[in-house]
Image 1 (cartoon, rainbow, N blue to C red):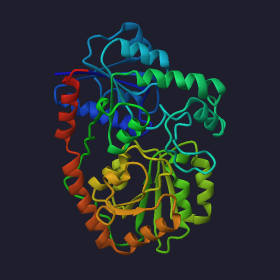
Image 2: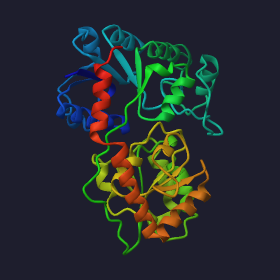
Image 3: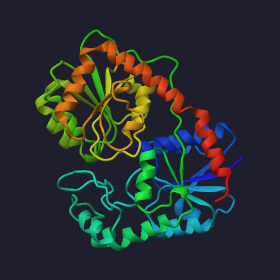
Image 4: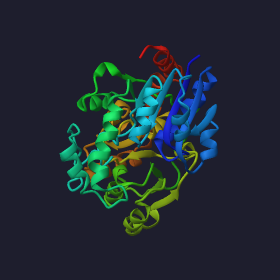
Length: 376
């Protein structure tokens, strides 16, 4: 069976990338694969994360050692151009593109002032100038946004193949100049519980937003929408991030109708008893694992029509699709599901069927097996 090496900046559960890596490694290992891990730094839940792999080492150690024994090295998130080049030269290497950080120096792929989503191909001068307008950060320097970023993107583009989770991301990579024949879509495996999570009809209904509390995830837009929601409810916010304090200040006028729960190592627990999961994303979400995960629990979605959302949020069937950034329409969509629990339940059940059909374990294992066993 194939021997695969996953490479990522972090060893720990930071967001969807790391949760995907953990679950994929466990599933592939159960099906006979050997899956190792390389990382640059440990973060929260690092022991749990690393336990998903057969063996782990630092990226620096892997570069020094070489690693020609692998059938495939998969770069999930690597920020050093020299490391990318060394790993690529050691053998067959694919880049798993989960987000926009390789071709957008701002890592968000939307404009800093208008916050409208971008559709440009990377240009060192224009994108470097745009990146300098973002919020101050330690890596917001001329060197980082111009020469350093361009060097990393050059090494990434030179990799042998690319993997994505959605048709949307495949189109984005083609826009960035990656040949379509080099891109493979391997759907994720989404676990579907034996029974749907009952939302309940007694008491105040709950809705949920889950993910990193950063600007691109749009929780500020959801808080704005909450002012227009007429039906009494509680918004549960699960996650942490740089915007947490600011978001809590924005939520103060809403009182007890918004509850921040912080980081959860097992977000599946948060879906229980929820009427709807809201996807208020500002950025063009490359996939958004939380969407199909919610549907797997029988919880319908309300989300802005951005990125890959349409690939599982079927308007009127698995939830309600809302024009990007339209907080008034989002408020009305939330009210719709709060006021009609039977419609919400029907949408959730259809969502479970959709996830079962599109994201089964065997499809993902077969995709990885075919890919890892093929020629570069």
